Amino acid sequence: MKIFTNKDIRYFFLAMSYILIGTILLIQLLLWRFYGTWNLVILLLSLFTALCLLGVFLLYFYKQNQIMEKAISQINLYLSGDSDVRIDCDKEGSLYKLFHAVNTLATALNAHGIKEKKLKEFLKDTISDISHQLKTPLTALTIYNGLLQEDIENISAVKEFALKSEKEVERIEMLVQNLLKITKLDAGTIILNKAPENIAKLIKDIYQYFEFRAINEKKNIALSGSDDTLLFCDRDWISEVISNIIKNALDHTTAGSQITVEWKKLLTVTQITIKDNGSGIHPEDIHHIFKRFYRSRFSKDTKGIGLGLSLAKTIVEAHGGNITVDSVLGKGSIFILNFLNLTKM
Image (tube, rainbow, N blue to C red; front, side, top):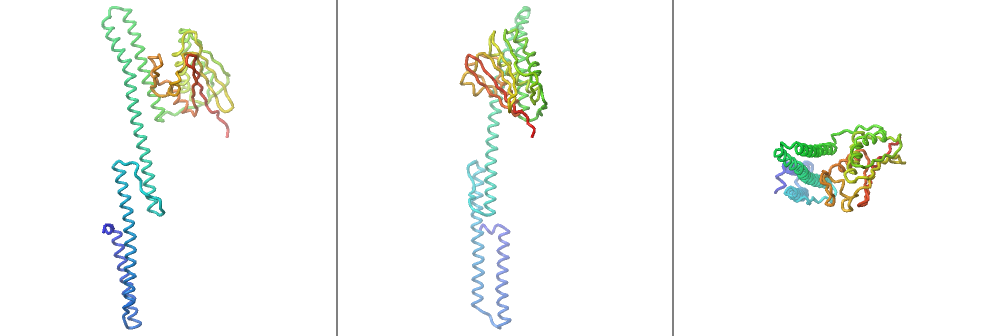
């Protein structure tokens, strides 16, 4: 029988057989010693009892072996690819506790497998998106390079195409830099150096960066908020967030438009609001704009790379905050950043 292939069970039955046979012989020797005769009835009863005990043990181990064989077959089915198969473990006992632990492990492995699959799909899509994003500026650079070679004697043409080439190189650099920033944040390799920062000073520094562009494009950036409001944050990363949203607003507004940056401290949160009266966001896109590389089919922007808002969301959430957007098509958008106020426990 299969159960006797297990050395421990085989030794158990041999030991029990020796003990029972020894016990029967000892009883008969005692009878002979005290009564001077063998007792056939007691001998038969003793043998019957011994056989019954061995039979009970044999039946128990046989059933246990059947349970183990069934469990092994279920495990083999799982290993062959049926990830939904599980071992029955609805009874009590140490063996069923083991089966429950195996089922828990299988569930954990399934979850890990699904996560790995999603990660592979994400990497595949990301690589595809990066390739697509790089293809446009690289194609433009190739064209400009060819035109430069043809019009090498035309200084004005050389300057024009050199300027266009520079913009495409900047676009590639921005893509690479944003990808590196998002990757580092996702990997958790960046430690946020948080400290109390004066929001007014932080935003005024950002304003100075965009001031020339705003004036040149005949747009107005208005700042509104208290001069002493503090935010516990990493200055560089929060500057990145606000800069990306202001840049996004400048990209989607026309001459004469207004962009308002407002900050205030509420009861539980510190809030930064960036509002514009530009083209707005199409209702179909409002729930997707924070996705990486998302490009609306309604957008006229052919230069964006679809990473700025995704990066902003990642940074804000890394600070324990949240970012929301409200927009009316043709009337403008409003981005709201909320950060929990620190309280003394």
